[in-house]
Amino acid sequence: MDYSFETERLRVVTSESVIPEELLRYYSENRSFFERYEPKQPDGFYTLQSMKDTLSFEADKILYRQSMYYYFYLKEEPEAILGTISFVRFRPLPYANVIFGYDLHKDFQGHGYATEACRGSIDKVLSMFNLHRIETRVATDNEKSINILKRLGFSYEGLEKSSIYLEGQFKDHYRYAFINEKYKTAD
Image (tube, rainbow, N blue to C red; front, side, top):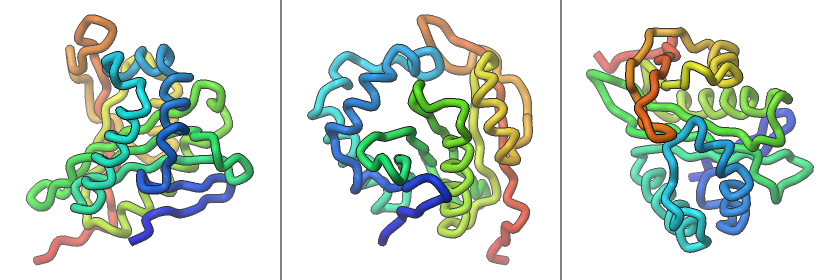
C-alpha cells in the first residue's frame, strides 16, 4: 500500500522510498542541532549501514501497522530531506492513541514546512487508523516546536518533570495531545 502523499509544496514519503545516503546526509548535517532536543545517537548511528538498518526497521513497523515513518521533501528538490515525522506504538482501545514526533533540517526552519508536513501526515494517519489521541512531548525551551503543535491543534496537558535524558541530564518536557473529535468507537 502506498502511504505517500503531497501537500501544496511538499512530497511526503515513507521509509521504503528513502535513499539511505540521503538519510545519512540529513542526520549528519543536523547532528549537533538535533542533540539539543533528542537523545544522543551513538557514533555508529552515523553510518550508511545504520541508515539502511533504520529504514528496514521502519519498513517492517509500517508493514505490520505498528508505526508510521514519514520523510518530507520540497517538490522541486526531491533529493534533499527537509524533515522526518514519526507515529510510534499505535495502541488500540482502550487507549486508541499513538506517540507523535518530528524534526526539521536546521536550514529550513521558519517557512512552515514542518507544520504543512505534520498536518498532512496527521490527516493521513487518522484516515488509516481509528485513533482518539495523538500524544507528544516537547522540550520546555523549544519554542518553535511548541508553536507548531499549537498551530496543529494540540493542547497543552502539563509538565513532565525530569522526563527525557538529554545532554547528560534528565530534562523537563511539556506534554501535548491532539484529540480526534471525529473518533468513533466500535460499540
